[in-house]
Length: 250
Image 1 (cartoon, rainbow, N blue to C red):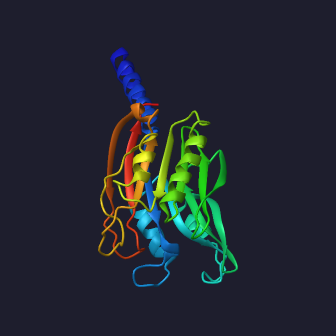
Image 2 (cartoon, rainbow, N blue to C red; image 1 turned 180 degrees about the horizontal axis):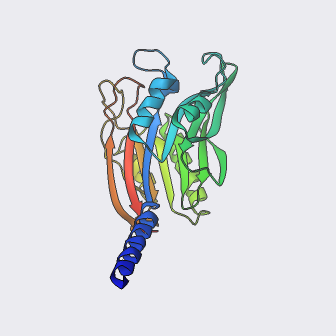
Image 3 (tube, rainbow, N blue to C red; image 1 turned 90 degrees about the vertical axis):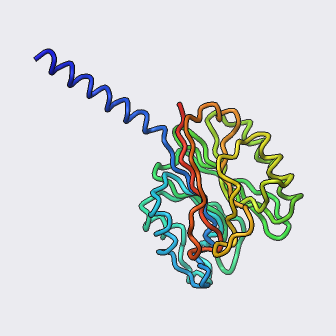
């Protein structure tokens, strides 16, 4: 009887330990969805959601997404993706566009504690930084300007925000910059890029690496495991999604 009790208690402690450990596992995706417009130039939000659902991410950084624009038939696209994936949504409009708005967003299994956004420079179109705080980390989403000067200024703004945050910080998005660019070199002073320098754009025949996921360097010491790859998805958007599995020690 005593032996059985010890076995049961040991098993219980093991499962509690596994459960607690798994709470520090994260699967992160970044995906420029081109508002659900595939390489066939047809909008298909279910197809976009199917790509996300196929990989069961905990959190997704979304770029290029409409909110009740005329071209989207007045549909709130991120809300529809939220319903199709069963995830919470957070939206940050960057510009007014075609009777509605256009911007970036987050889909997450966990409901954020707090969400806000800040303007970023973009001379071809205004940009925005989305900041979503969760229980154990903060998630930043970007879709940088096409202009290097604007990109460098954006990193300065991100550095200022980073200094205010005490939790581990992930940043993800379409940076519109190559791995060896001055922009990514500057970002790398404060962030450790966790995804491979593989080409993500255009989706059907990738020629450029533009999409990344990174963690702030203060918190990189807590990374116990990481694995990442570019998803072989050539049709649903003009960018391929990037996926990261990461385990933190806290």
